[in-house]
Length: 269
Image (tube, rainbow, N blue to C red):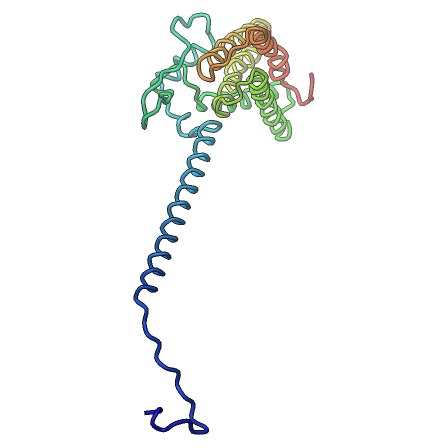
């Protein structure tokens, strides 16, 4: 219609209709689909490997917090016997494994007496603070500020114990033990401290027997536990240093117990 009118001023001439190219559309569609598919697969691979890396490191260093609270009365009684009387423990000190998802995993505390838990350490820490408050009250020194100070003092002692155990593993090249495991092992210290402080409240002279005994028992428990961690769980062995470091862990319990069992509002004594 426009061709028959010719070029007239004021009337735009429409462009001619382009011929469709089915091969070009096919190549473009196939290329874009191939690119999208390749990028999607590559992205899923990166995200999958990243999530697996993060999950593996989290499980390596922090584990699952719920794992440490799977306990019952039977486990608590037997675990307290192991911690307070490690000389009487006739069984093995290694942890029990089970296949989970194609790999070996440690059984929870309810099924393994040697597994670490956080229930006993947290309850022992709370009991330690309560007994310390009672001791202050009997001596007429109780106050909310003093109780807060003892709570903070106990946390500092727990942190020092964790640092001692963790630095020992690092010095032997075995720093891959889960952090919550080390926190649990260090927290068992307060079970013996509760016995010593309770003896000091009931009969003052019994403290001079109970404190060294519980300190010795905790040293033996930590030495046997850390030896298992070094040789079995992280498979590290250095005969030139590990005996001295384990002995240092046992000896370090005496000043720590002496400091935390001395119920005062001072930093030292």
